[in-house]
Image (cartoon, rainbow, N blue to C red; front, side):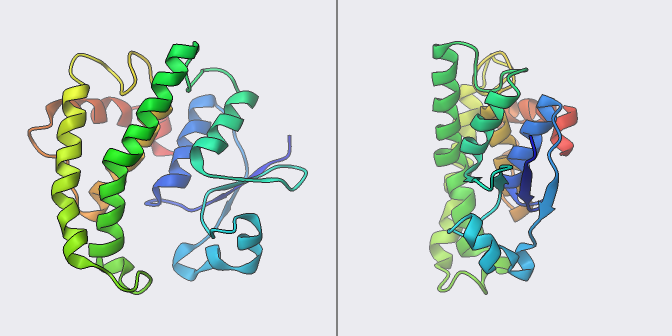
Length: 206
């Protein structure tokens, strides 16, 4: 199947999710880099692919375009079912979905708010920045990481005993937060151990 992935390199967390997913599958799709710093994501051509002007976008051979990382990865899961990254049973699928949503709302949300409203890199594009609100998300992020630390007690991965899409979402979120200046607390030993395990996988470098 002839597909292409409109991608943005590190540190952009969302395209990285799809790259990690593909690496876990041992699948390769041509990448077309879209430079956010040059505003290429807001070009007429790219907005035609995704009206929100965001990356990643998966373009199929018939020109159909898919946006949103989980939707893209679910489609790819149907093409490359092994190893399963959304669970093998109905219960496992529900658990992965639950954890993906929890990671997005509890962990990535405060990191994203900090990035948009308190980081100097975004000051020119997020107008106005609400810096007091942005800085308040430091504490919210730390609280979320400590909550995740408790949930990881006694298990290897976010959604259970195997690596899944939930780990991909969590890894991309934690690494992006670290890049913005939000660090994992020293007290979060379970998160630190989990992060070392998943970072050691070959896919983490995708």
